[in-house]
Length: 326
Image (cartoon, rainbow, N blue to C red; front, side, top):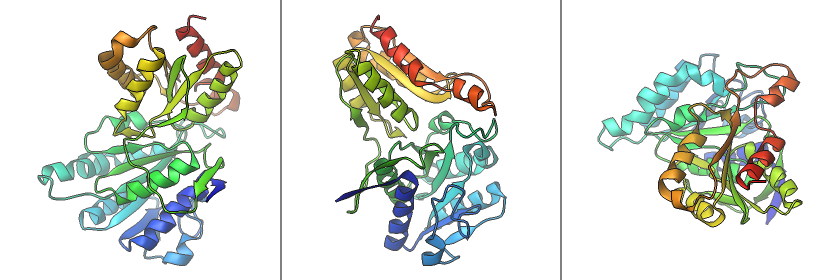
């Protein structure tokens, strides 16, 4: 039976269930224990699992992330939370030079079951140092999985899979999704990495989007439907591994593609997905691929300006009409 719960509650359930299932799972992060986290994802976990497994850390990201990577190498399953993805700039050596490479450099003998939870994206006027979308940075690094769920159902199932994974996982949430609701089963479930979800089926054009751009794309698709344009919306859910088969099947069906990312256009994941489509489904395209992305600008503090630097519903609608030659 499914219930409707919040995105943040789905994450909390995933953490609680995996900590009950496996005593090697533990949490580390700033303010995650007594306060339950700034976005209340870890609320009440301290009461059940003690300070030995729900650890409030100092404001020292490099140190406690390094400790988490070391614990993973030693056989534990740490889930380390970095409050804002912007702050991951402080831990790149630990993630990129150590966690991502350790299994390869050990000849495949040393797994690193490490999860980094963080959140990004715009919302609430948190300004340039707390609002970035940096998935492309981690997407670029061999040895890392990159997960970006858009719904409570996906958030829970993918986080459980991330914790069980024997390789380092970058698990990226969005600050505007925490209070969104969706159906989540009470029964145990996980979601395999590399398995995209068709959020809406359609025949005239394909929208590929992830994280908070999924609900925005679905809203755009609903308005386009009122004009007789039937759009398919694909959510990759995991960027690494990427479900190319589902994406390419949709492209071959609709023959028109719009890719939507909140991150800035330059050097983004959307460009790489576009190159994959060009290489493997070029003959099916009836129009150039359109990319709708954030502006190449730091995120402004002003709420009105903030809303202008990331894709809006009308931008997505206009891009779909462009590939439809309307």
